[in-house]
Image (cartoon, rainbow, N blue to C red; front, side, top):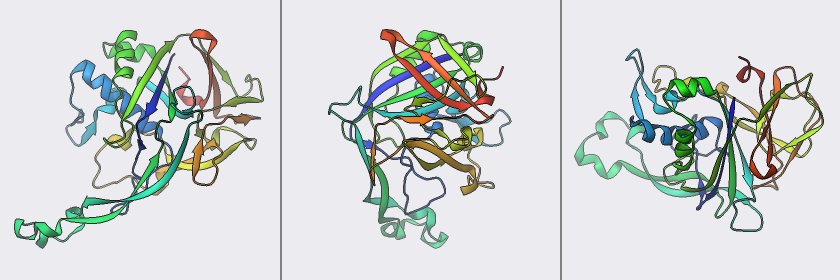
Length: 292
Protein backbone atom coordinates (compact mmCIF):
# COMPACT_ATOMS: atom_id res chain seq x y z
CA UNK A 1 0.00 0.00 0.00
CA UNK A 2 1.00 3.59 -0.67
CA UNK A 3 -0.19 6.59 1.29
CA UNK A 4 -0.62 9.97 -0.35
CA UNK A 5 -1.29 13.11 1.68
CA UNK A 6 -2.23 16.34 -0.11
CA UNK A 7 -2.21 19.64 1.77
CA UNK A 8 -4.04 22.59 0.31
CA UNK A 9 -5.89 25.83 0.78
CA UNK A 10 -9.47 26.83 -0.04
CA UNK A 11 -9.92 30.10 -1.92
CA UNK A 12 -13.48 30.67 -0.71
CA UNK A 13 -14.83 27.23 0.19
CA UNK A 14 -16.62 24.41 -1.60
CA UNK A 15 -20.01 23.03 -2.56
CA UNK A 16 -20.76 19.33 -2.97
CA UNK A 17 -24.44 19.00 -3.69
CA UNK A 18 -26.42 16.36 -1.79
CA UNK A 19 -27.28 13.89 -4.53
CA UNK A 20 -30.83 13.22 -3.34
CA UNK A 21 -31.84 16.88 -3.67
CA UNK A 22 -33.00 18.67 -6.80
CA UNK A 23 -33.67 22.40 -7.18
CA UNK A 24 -33.15 23.62 -3.61
CA UNK A 25 -29.79 21.93 -3.26
CA UNK A 26 -28.08 21.77 0.09
CA UNK A 27 -24.53 20.48 0.35
CA UNK A 28 -22.48 18.07 2.43
CA UNK A 29 -20.55 19.64 5.32
CA UNK A 30 -17.35 17.91 4.17
CA UNK A 31 -16.19 16.78 0.71
CA UNK A 32 -17.12 13.05 0.75
CA UNK A 33 -14.62 10.30 -0.22
CA UNK A 34 -16.05 10.06 -3.75
CA UNK A 35 -15.38 13.78 -4.29
CA UNK A 36 -11.79 13.41 -3.08
CA UNK A 37 -11.21 10.52 -5.48
CA UNK A 38 -12.83 12.53 -8.27
CA UNK A 39 -10.46 15.44 -7.57
CA UNK A 40 -7.45 13.14 -7.88
CA UNK A 41 -8.95 11.46 -10.95
CA UNK A 42 -9.00 14.84 -12.68
CA UNK A 43 -5.21 14.95 -12.39
CA UNK A 44 -4.84 11.33 -13.48
CA UNK A 45 -7.05 12.05 -16.50
CA UNK A 46 -4.72 14.91 -17.45
CA UNK A 47 -1.67 12.66 -17.11
CA UNK A 48 -3.21 9.89 -19.22
CA UNK A 49 -5.07 12.22 -21.58
CA UNK A 50 -8.54 10.71 -21.09
CA UNK A 51 -11.85 12.63 -20.94
CA UNK A 52 -13.65 13.35 -17.66
CA UNK A 53 -16.63 11.22 -18.73
CA UNK A 54 -16.80 8.17 -20.99
CA UNK A 55 -18.89 5.13 -21.87
CA UNK A 56 -18.54 2.15 -19.55
CA UNK A 57 -16.65 -0.94 -20.71
CA UNK A 58 -19.97 -2.52 -21.71
CA UNK A 59 -21.12 0.70 -23.46
CA UNK A 60 -24.30 0.60 -21.38
CA UNK A 61 -23.94 3.76 -19.32
CA UNK A 62 -21.88 6.93 -18.92
CA UNK A 63 -19.28 6.87 -16.15
CA UNK A 64 -16.93 9.41 -14.64
CA UNK A 65 -13.20 9.13 -15.22
CA UNK A 66 -13.01 8.52 -11.45
CA UNK A 67 -13.74 4.88 -12.31
CA UNK A 68 -10.27 4.85 -13.90
CA UNK A 69 -8.63 4.91 -10.46
CA UNK A 70 -11.51 3.40 -8.49
CA UNK A 71 -9.69 0.11 -7.99
CA UNK A 72 -6.33 1.74 -7.31
CA UNK A 73 -7.50 4.22 -4.68
CA UNK A 74 -8.71 2.02 -1.85
CA UNK A 75 -9.79 4.82 0.50
CA UNK A 76 -9.87 8.61 0.76
CA UNK A 77 -10.59 10.91 3.67
CA UNK A 78 -10.46 14.60 4.58
CA UNK A 79 -9.66 16.95 7.46
CA UNK A 80 -9.54 20.69 7.92
CA UNK A 81 -5.99 21.65 8.83
CA UNK A 82 -4.20 24.67 10.22
CA UNK A 83 -1.01 23.65 8.37
CA UNK A 84 -1.94 25.37 5.13
CA UNK A 85 -4.21 28.04 6.52
CA UNK A 86 -3.46 31.72 5.90
CA UNK A 87 -5.20 32.34 9.21
CA UNK A 88 -4.21 31.16 12.67
CA UNK A 89 -7.05 28.65 12.73
CA UNK A 90 -9.03 27.05 9.94
CA UNK A 91 -12.81 27.27 10.23
CA UNK A 92 -15.70 26.76 7.83
CA UNK A 93 -19.37 27.72 7.91
CA UNK A 94 -22.26 25.98 6.18
CA UNK A 95 -24.61 28.42 4.47
CA UNK A 96 -27.10 28.80 1.63
CA UNK A 97 -26.80 31.45 -1.07
CA UNK A 98 -29.36 32.45 -3.66
CA UNK A 99 -28.21 31.65 -7.18
CA UNK A 100 -29.64 31.85 -10.70
CA UNK A 101 -30.26 28.21 -11.52
CA UNK A 102 -31.17 26.36 -14.71
CA UNK A 103 -34.67 24.99 -13.99
CA UNK A 104 -35.71 23.51 -17.33
CA UNK A 105 -34.93 20.00 -16.08
CA UNK A 106 -37.85 20.26 -13.66
CA UNK A 107 -40.39 21.78 -16.06
CA UNK A 108 -42.96 20.19 -18.33
CA UNK A 109 -42.03 19.48 -21.93
CA UNK A 110 -44.18 22.35 -23.29
CA UNK A 111 -41.58 24.81 -22.00
CA UNK A 112 -38.69 23.13 -23.83
CA UNK A 113 -38.91 25.64 -26.68
CA UNK A 114 -37.03 28.86 -27.41
CA UNK A 115 -40.12 31.03 -27.06
CA UNK A 116 -40.37 29.83 -23.45
CA UNK A 117 -36.69 30.46 -22.66
CA UNK A 118 -37.51 33.22 -20.17
CA UNK A 119 -38.93 30.46 -17.95
CA UNK A 120 -35.83 28.28 -18.06
CA UNK A 121 -34.07 29.94 -15.14
CA UNK A 122 -35.12 30.60 -11.59
CA UNK A 123 -33.77 31.65 -8.23
CA UNK A 124 -33.22 29.15 -5.43
CA UNK A 125 -31.02 28.53 -2.42
CA UNK A 126 -27.80 26.63 -2.98
CA UNK A 127 -25.79 25.11 -0.16
CA UNK A 128 -22.16 26.15 0.26
CA UNK A 129 -19.46 25.77 2.87
CA UNK A 130 -17.48 28.98 3.27
CA UNK A 131 -13.88 28.29 4.25
CA UNK A 132 -12.00 31.35 2.99
CA UNK A 133 -8.28 30.82 3.44
CA UNK A 134 -8.82 27.60 5.40
CA UNK A 135 -6.33 24.77 5.07
CA UNK A 136 -7.18 21.12 4.47
CA UNK A 137 -5.59 17.70 4.15
CA UNK A 138 -6.72 14.77 2.03
CA UNK A 139 -5.38 11.28 2.66
CA UNK A 140 -5.44 8.57 -0.01
CA UNK A 141 -4.66 4.89 0.51
CA UNK A 142 -3.46 3.45 -2.78
CA UNK A 143 -2.93 -0.07 -4.08
CA UNK A 144 0.50 0.26 -5.68
CA UNK A 145 0.16 -2.75 -7.98
CA UNK A 146 -3.17 -1.61 -9.40
CA UNK A 147 -1.77 1.88 -9.86
CA UNK A 148 1.15 0.44 -11.84
CA UNK A 149 -1.33 -1.50 -13.98
CA UNK A 150 -2.61 1.88 -15.15
CA UNK A 151 0.90 2.65 -16.41
CA UNK A 152 1.50 5.19 -13.65
CA UNK A 153 4.32 5.60 -11.14
CA UNK A 154 5.05 7.75 -8.07
CA UNK A 155 5.91 10.77 -10.20
CA UNK A 156 2.59 10.50 -12.04
CA UNK A 157 0.77 10.22 -8.72
CA UNK A 158 2.39 13.39 -7.43
CA UNK A 159 1.68 15.15 -10.73
CA UNK A 160 -1.98 14.18 -10.40
CA UNK A 161 -2.04 15.40 -6.79
CA UNK A 162 -0.56 18.78 -7.71
CA UNK A 163 -3.10 18.98 -10.55
CA UNK A 164 -6.03 19.06 -8.13
CA UNK A 165 -7.69 22.41 -8.78
CA UNK A 166 -11.05 22.04 -7.05
CA UNK A 167 -13.03 20.04 -4.53
CA UNK A 168 -16.67 19.65 -5.45
CA UNK A 169 -18.28 22.11 -7.85
CA UNK A 170 -16.08 23.80 -10.43
CA UNK A 171 -16.16 27.01 -8.42
CA UNK A 172 -14.66 25.26 -5.36
CA UNK A 173 -11.13 26.26 -6.28
CA UNK A 174 -8.20 25.15 -4.16
CA UNK A 175 -4.44 25.58 -4.22
CA UNK A 176 -2.30 22.54 -3.46
CA UNK A 177 0.56 23.48 -1.14
CA UNK A 178 2.28 20.09 -0.92
CA UNK A 179 1.83 16.44 -1.82
CA UNK A 180 3.81 13.55 -0.45
CA UNK A 181 3.89 9.78 -1.03
CA UNK A 182 4.90 7.29 1.66
CA UNK A 183 5.62 3.57 1.61
CA UNK A 184 6.01 3.50 5.38
CA UNK A 185 2.44 2.34 5.91
CA UNK A 186 1.46 0.11 8.83
CA UNK A 187 -1.94 -1.52 9.11
CA UNK A 188 -3.47 -2.74 12.37
CA UNK A 189 -6.64 -4.75 12.83
CA UNK A 190 -9.10 -4.04 15.61
CA UNK A 191 -7.36 -6.71 17.68
CA UNK A 192 -3.84 -5.35 17.15
CA UNK A 193 -4.41 -1.59 17.15
CA UNK A 194 -3.04 0.20 20.18
CA UNK A 195 -5.89 2.17 21.72
CA UNK A 196 -6.82 4.83 22.47
CA UNK A 197 -5.51 6.90 19.58
CA UNK A 198 -6.42 10.19 17.92
CA UNK A 199 -7.20 11.07 14.31
CA UNK A 200 -8.13 14.24 12.45
CA UNK A 201 -9.77 12.49 9.50
CA UNK A 202 -13.46 11.58 9.23
CA UNK A 203 -14.48 7.91 8.98
CA UNK A 204 -17.68 5.77 8.96
CA UNK A 205 -19.18 5.45 12.44
CA UNK A 206 -19.64 1.69 11.97
CA UNK A 207 -15.86 1.19 12.17
CA UNK A 208 -15.70 1.87 15.92
CA UNK A 209 -17.50 0.28 18.87
CA UNK A 210 -16.84 2.85 21.55
CA UNK A 211 -18.23 6.38 21.35
CA UNK A 212 -15.60 8.65 19.83
CA UNK A 213 -14.63 11.58 22.03
CA UNK A 214 -14.47 15.00 20.38
CA UNK A 215 -16.63 13.88 17.43
CA UNK A 216 -20.10 14.32 16.00
CA UNK A 217 -21.95 12.43 13.29
CA UNK A 218 -22.58 13.64 9.74
CA UNK A 219 -24.19 11.85 6.79
CA UNK A 220 -22.04 11.29 3.71
CA UNK A 221 -22.43 9.02 0.67
CA UNK A 222 -21.12 5.48 0.88
CA UNK A 223 -17.98 4.96 -1.16
CA UNK A 224 -19.36 2.87 -4.00
CA UNK A 225 -18.43 2.69 -7.68
CA UNK A 226 -22.06 3.27 -8.71
CA UNK A 227 -21.89 6.88 -7.49
CA UNK A 228 -19.81 7.73 -10.59
CA UNK A 229 -22.33 6.21 -12.98
CA UNK A 230 -25.20 7.98 -14.71
CA UNK A 231 -28.14 5.75 -13.73
CA UNK A 232 -31.48 7.28 -14.75
CA UNK A 233 -33.33 4.01 -14.02
CA UNK A 234 -31.68 3.52 -10.61
CA UNK A 235 -30.63 6.89 -9.18
CA UNK A 236 -28.50 7.33 -6.10
CA UNK A 237 -30.81 7.29 -3.07
CA UNK A 238 -30.93 8.30 0.57
CA UNK A 239 -30.18 4.75 1.74
CA UNK A 240 -26.82 4.98 -0.07
CA UNK A 241 -25.61 7.30 2.70
CA UNK A 242 -24.15 6.41 6.08
CA UNK A 243 -23.08 8.07 9.31
CA UNK A 244 -19.52 9.34 9.61
CA UNK A 245 -17.63 10.70 12.59
CA UNK A 246 -15.99 14.11 12.12
CA UNK A 247 -14.44 16.55 14.63
CA UNK A 248 -17.07 18.33 16.72
CA UNK A 249 -18.31 21.62 15.33
CA UNK A 250 -19.41 24.78 17.09
CA UNK A 251 -22.97 25.05 15.87
CA UNK A 252 -22.72 25.79 12.14
CA UNK A 253 -18.97 26.40 12.41
CA UNK A 254 -16.79 23.50 11.25
CA UNK A 255 -13.26 23.44 12.60
CA UNK A 256 -10.04 21.51 12.95
CA UNK A 257 -9.81 18.98 15.74
CA UNK A 258 -8.85 15.49 16.77
CA UNK A 259 -11.12 12.58 17.67
CA UNK A 260 -10.17 10.06 20.33
CA UNK A 261 -10.96 6.47 19.35
CA UNK A 262 -11.21 4.10 22.30
CA UNK A 263 -12.00 0.85 20.51
CA UNK A 264 -12.28 -0.29 16.89
CA UNK A 265 -15.04 -2.55 15.63
CA UNK A 266 -14.10 -5.79 13.87
CA UNK A 267 -14.77 -4.20 10.49
CA UNK A 268 -12.43 -1.28 11.26
CA UNK A 269 -8.66 -1.00 10.86
CA UNK A 270 -6.06 1.59 11.79
CA UNK A 271 -3.61 2.86 9.16
CA UNK A 272 -0.49 4.69 10.36
CA UNK A 273 1.58 6.37 7.63
CA UNK A 274 4.88 8.15 8.26
CA UNK A 275 5.96 11.06 6.06
CA UNK A 276 8.89 13.45 5.96
CA UNK A 277 9.89 15.62 8.92
CA UNK A 278 8.45 13.06 11.31
CA UNK A 279 4.82 13.65 10.30
CA UNK A 280 2.57 10.72 11.20
CA UNK A 281 -0.99 10.40 9.93
CA UNK A 282 -3.50 8.04 11.58
CA UNK A 283 -6.61 7.07 9.64
CA UNK A 284 -9.49 4.71 10.40
CA UNK A 285 -10.52 2.63 7.35
CA UNK A 286 -12.81 -0.34 6.62
CA UNK A 287 -10.83 -3.55 7.04
CA UNK A 288 -11.96 -4.65 3.58
CA UNK A 289 -9.93 -1.94 1.81
CA UNK A 290 -6.63 -3.14 3.32
CA UNK A 291 -7.11 -6.85 2.82
CA UNK A 292 -5.05 -8.40 -0.04
